Length: 206
Image 1 (spheres, helix red, strand yellow):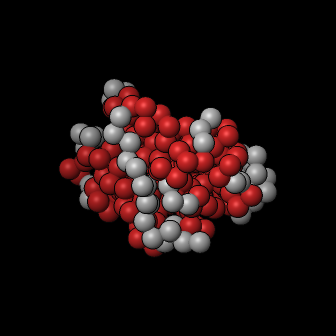
Image 2 (cartoon, rainbow, N blue to C red; image 1 turned 90 degrees about the horizontal axis):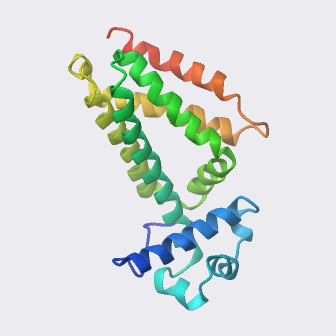
């Protein structure tokens, strides 16, 4: 079932409501690590979260809305992690190429740490997200890379928007396909090397 938009019946404005919604998301993620999304019931999610069915329907009209919100949360977390890594990496006073490579390394390390979950999320994204939602998430990643590149002192020497787009095209493609097309654990070191090689042509003049 494709979701046209993320529909949340009740947007949490207080800390308690936020805690409840996060508990539902976290419970779904925990169950997702054990079984396929289609096999997970709303009752299982609410039991694990320690809330009743009525509470679930205060926030969501159907399970797919929770699934879509979960994907959105992890996209947000990934973007936030990249922004935080930007601040730390800038302190190392590296050139632009090394700066980009370091950010990619940190991003891959974060995904590799939870590779089974990310495999499920990438697949779920393709199953329930319509083109508008997919494009919004894709654009957010590109904008996050734009932000990261603009923080480097040498950003005026490059076309930031074009480079950000290509970095995400390459890294997203390599990482998502590595998780989806093979039953084996990806060789993350080799994937990182391949990503660096693919991006090198876009930054070799800097």
